[in-house]
Length: 78
Image (spheres, rainbow, N blue to C red):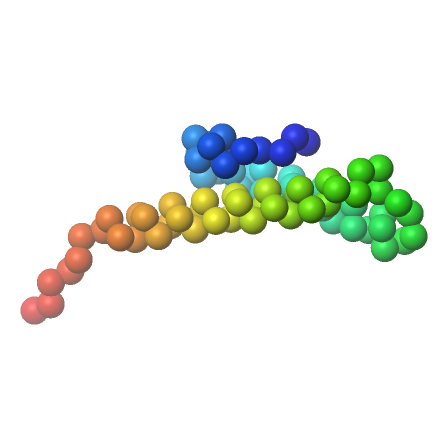
C-alpha cells in the first residue's frame, strides 16, 4: 500500500479514510511482528513512514470532528 499525502487524505470521505487507516495498521502490525520474531523487514524505513501516515490520518479525522462540533448551533438555556 502506498503512503498517502495529507492533501489526498483531506479530499477523502470519512469512511474511505477509516478504511485506509485500518489497512495501514494491519501492515504496521505485520512489519512489527516480522521484526519481533527476529527477521529483518524488507524496508526498515517503511515502519516509520506507516506510523507517520497513521498519525496524519488520525489528526485529520480529529480536525474534522472538532470542526463539526464547532459548527453546531449553541443551545440557549431556558
